[in-house]
Length: 145
Image (cartoon, rainbow, N blue to C red; front, side, top):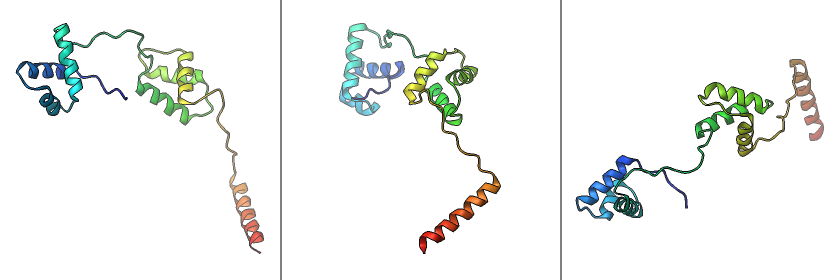
């Protein structure tokens, strides 16, 4: 089951205040567009703690936000032959809290980029383009006959 976004303190306070006024939980859930289970759990937590504030989480925060990951992905797609060090340096220009190269590599691996350089495309001059086109037309005529 997918987790949804956490309710703000204002939404929690609104649920608790409506419950204190005697409104049924099903009516609160319909009015606010939340599941009845969510409303009941917020009320239960309020009864135990006496407060609607969110509890502090344990664990370390992520070094990069989703937006930073998207920025890194866009940078990599634009410059396929770059190194992780170059991408990390470019991303650190826009970040207030810089990241290390290993973090950049980890995120790149999660995005599906590994230590492989992008494929080089052949440079086709104007002269060679015309010759290729002429050869293709000539070959097409040979296969039809």
